[in-house]
Image (cartoon, rainbow, N blue to C red):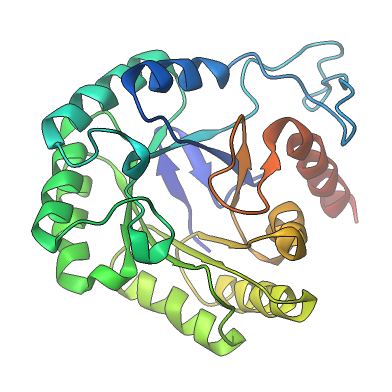
Length: 278
């Protein structure tokens, strides 16, 4: 599995990266949610503060637990206005040092709004050209030509592209998931992301099996997750099967089953430590 660089944060290397979604509806909410990403405290599952010793620095505390911020553009009140989105992206860039992954999640994949193909291309290429974002999420369902157009704009601006699929209804077979992740690599994307809704633990196991198989085959980083309570283990231990990042919350969740970043970070660090020593 190769690496992908989002403004200095390397996916596919070392501990899995924590991506935290923000879902602001207004510019004021965007600024507030960006500021909330800083100054987080590590907590256990009961909300008790933990000492921060991940890097052997006794007593020190992180300014940021999250590694990347995902901006869910579809939640924004001016989501269909490229000019307003470009302005908001610049504001967000000035409010956080974290790399920004820009995502317009459409209605068929669990988002709040939909866009015609031309609007979708124009919005995401404008964002890529703005220079404010480190990554652009593009839904695989949009097709190879759309992905290629956005990919060209993103790469010209030094940004990465995440090809994604979100299935809120079911979990496909292991082979189907592997095939989908392979299609993402074939599209030219820098990162492949697949998220599904399990009906039981067997579905979550199928996703993790697919993640492992794909990670042994593909040359780009993979991000996978099973949603809801049944899929929580995939968010916590996905790195053991080849997932390079996980989504965790600071504030409201953007998908079912997301764990607070303050709780998830010490768990990921512990898993990574013991996996290295095993």
